Length: 86
Image 1: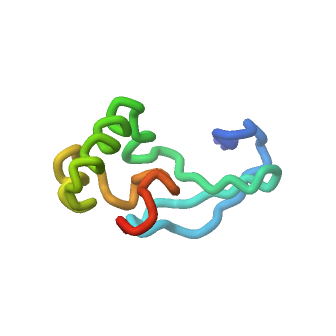
Image 2: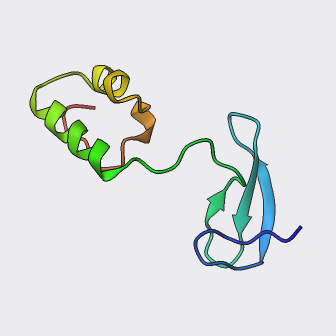
């Protein structure tokens, strides 16, 4: 089975330990991207990001927003949450 990097499609991929869920991690030697073969979840949709943005304006806690939109707080994109709310 040949692995390819999801970012650069290179075949230069090596095993790189395990994640918290005990899934095998792989690392691309060309671009440095680290990934698992079958991620449990995909990226957060644009619609969900817009909903999170509107809920932040309502001064709802991050934990409350995460529960409401069924997204882990960890999955909020970097720099998406304004400073002072984290």
